[in-house]
Image (cartoon, rainbow, N blue to C red; front, side, top):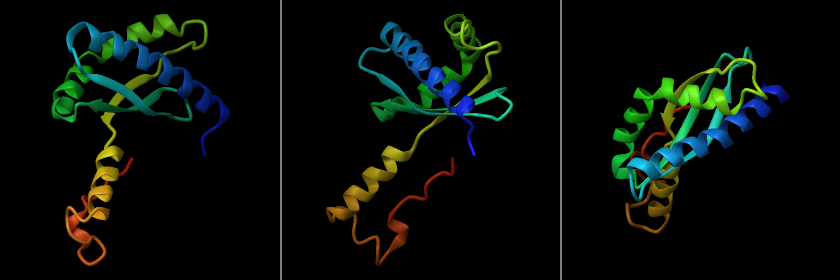
Amino acid sequence: METNRQKKIAGVLQKDLADVLQHAAQDGMKGVIISVTKVQVTSDLSQAKIYLSVFPQLNRELILRGVQENTSTIRYEMAKRTRNQLRRMPELSFYIDDSLDYIEDIDNALKGKKGNPIKDPELLNKRLKS
């Protein structure tokens, strides 16, 4: 169960991370949209899991790797932005949010583009647990 404090910190991180990542995308990657879909903060507030959605999806693994390699720079920028709200910046871990892929698979199946997932459940990809 998430506490109100965890939710508040997750909200602050989500908003500021979206700004930082969008700014970085504008500088180096034209036409790429990075959105922060979800932030989960541990109960001791020391770690944050950040889920990203990247459009277009072709580059998402490359972009995720780039974000992960620059985590310390992103964390420093976040610490400057949130210094009045947080005493310590949590460690940041970045992941790809696959929920849009899952929804798209269901949508295509419902439109009959992939066959019938009720008769053949293997048609839908298994969702990664978050």
